[in-house]
Image (cartoon, rainbow, N blue to C red; front, top):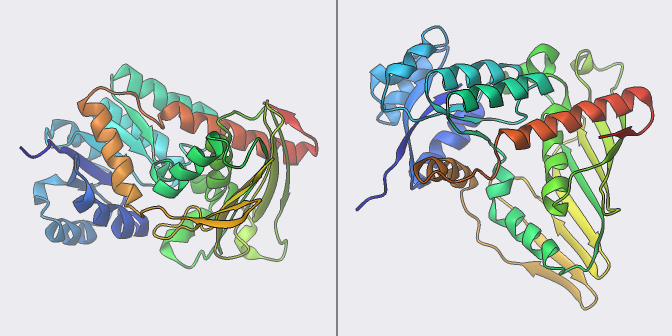
Length: 340
């Protein structure tokens, strides 16, 4: 018998949803796309026709709450600008649906907690879309570090950079602080931050940070360009991280241990990863099979719903990162370390 597939609705049909998420559904074993929510009727109708979605399963932001009457929809995936995650997660929970929210979870700790509370009240699961935690190369890196392959972990680095282009539709909102909540940290910086947590298996206890934005660059009137931050972990491990909207194409991390080092570069690409170990006997390329990690993360939520399992990246995971990002901003503002 074919496995049962839960019905998913996508809220927001931007470039990420149309070019990454929708093409991933055919690779899913437990999830299927059944509904769309968009402010553009023409785009929604075209995508619905291309993906065999019934026209009655198209919603806009005004009639979104009617989705509660649609039994075909089990899960709602929020793919909107950061500041809108909380509102639509709460409305989805009130509609009686399970929720996946893009990261960062929200633009404030308070909003994160409201999202968690709403889903708990509705007895619905809330997962944050930390796709890297479902990606085979990242999972292999976690396994190698935990197994002691590079010895005792001492130090890590992680850097993520991309050019911000507000002229592009997918970047226009990212230059708007009200919608984005911040600049590079609230976008790609969450990859650097979250990676340090899942690679160490620890939570930071102290954070230092510096921020710089080109004062002559109009892109950074509202949001920051570059953030450099250091995390101190209970074991003594330190992590140096960065995020920037001022340089292109960096998405890597490195882990240094007493017996060698591990480099994943690129680490958080959509399609391509390269994992290497540097040990006493030389360099070793680690072969891992690339897989569709968008499908993997969506199927994880569907499986946890179907079998009532505990989520790997629940709302509490997103809350922690937002708490740390607020501490990074505070440490930069104060010019001194902040305890967390």
